[in-house]
Image 1 (cartoon, one colour):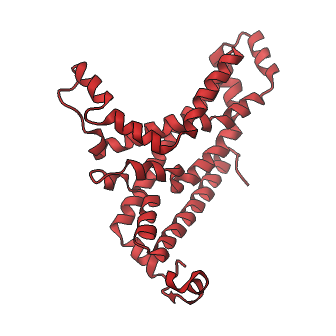
Image 2 (tube, rainbow, N blue to C red):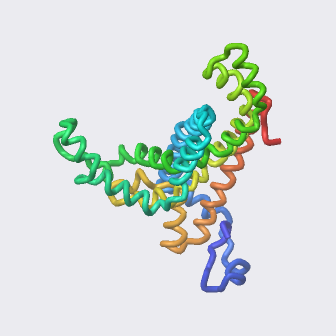
Length: 271
């Protein structure tokens, strides 16, 4: 479909087989469209920010959670950290609008503390979009993303920790010399997958689509929302397919590059 001018009125089968062949025209249009490149660079920017902030935070959370001695308290913290993952982005963005509105809780607190004189327009200022995106995504996903790290830590031989305690190793020494080296393969593999997922936006479509408004539309546009608009709203199915194909190829390239670099530097890789 990406290489044709798909006609949906021909039906799903005839449309696929009999639509006019246009070759690379859809790709040429894509590469010369400034709105595509805007969405492309926004996608890279937000995904890298989420990776830089969220990935280490999930590791840190898993390591610190492992240090909790009380079993019931550990389970309580785990449960609380997992819950945001199952909350719909509709509710999350709704609360963001409620908290960050001109008459919202955040502005109200800042004014009462005499930090600001007038409300800050968080929701219509492009400069605040990255902060809102990263922090809301971190709150919603860090607990869920830490599950694999928690499982990897659980599989560490407990006698290693016991021997370290006997030798006088403190808590931070045990984390540095036992916990982190033991989960290094897991960290590397998940990092490779996360780098490959940069072009897939970490599932940010709902987040960005709901957060976007006329004032911050350019700052909130990513490849997924761009594809949705040209494919569903404008019914340009072939062009949207070309964009999706480009994104998939870019994701494969990132995966291969990340895997090769990891294999050379650390010896850990997917294949």
